[in-house]
Image (cartoon, rainbow, N blue to C red; front, side):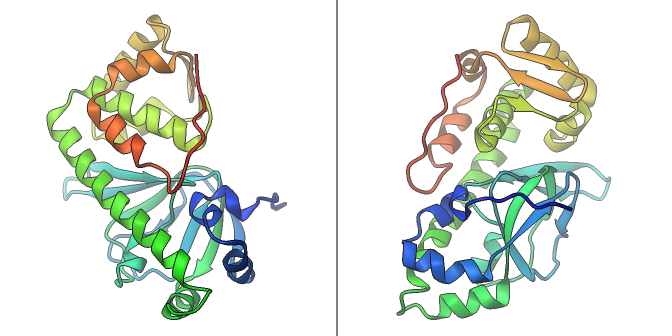
Length: 246
């Protein structure tokens, strides 16, 4: 399979590294292709590799005994998988599934730990600081999503989810089915279809089976709850160039 070429700095954590530190890290990074629905790790599984997405998106999910599943957070180019590694526990606390195919840089956890252990040297300091900053932001987002799922309407939650997904992908096009969105939000497909039809009639999106196009971001923002802004403001490490949609 032909692997495309991506600058590691397309991942926002790697982007913030000083040039010398990035160059020292590059020999340990492997660019890989991630397929949709690919499971990167299961809950309670020992983590052997971390991933820095460049244009892929992963869904972190928790399941109940009845088989129902809810997404607790997404990870794209703004971060890395999995924050457990930087918090000194190499065990996954959720299942990580690729929700949007693309590419990521893969790195051995063992090598990462060796680099970070050199906390007084030039190779470890900034990377460790950025990963810890992201881990803190990640935990805030998980808490916010938990509150959102309990207190806000499905229309607000769907709007928040769509906005953050479009922004993480830096795109106005999304390839996903209503069934998959319902699965991630823990609701029936029919509920998503009903809202998607409403959004289309209001000129917010265009959709056909397996594909959704954002037409009016501002209107979608009006539909979302305050959780969208809370999460969006802390989404990227460093400064994020916003992409305006009419």
